[in-house]
Image (tube, rainbow, N blue to C red; front, side, top):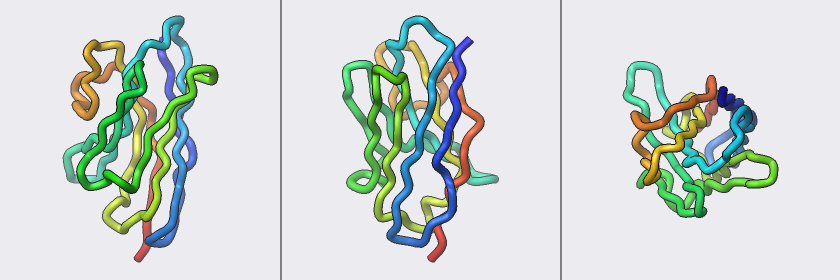
Length: 124
């Protein structure tokens, strides 16, 4: 059974940076598409960034140029480096994985496994 655990959330002032990590375990084949999603209470979940098996990436327009998704195939972890954070980036961030091909990237409905999430709060 796949298991994903996020870490690295916290509180930061606008303009600051945070790095989220997702520890991915419990599967024998790590050919997965991995994504980061965020949600604010009362709002729909938003795809933020995703990376496929080959290293191709996609980003939401609101974070392009500020956030970078990456993965470590040896550790089976993936990451979200968030720079120039804005108050509107405040949300609960979750990592997700799917073996669906082709990679659905920012379409969260096609992801199979989810972490519990980590809160990111950006103050003005």
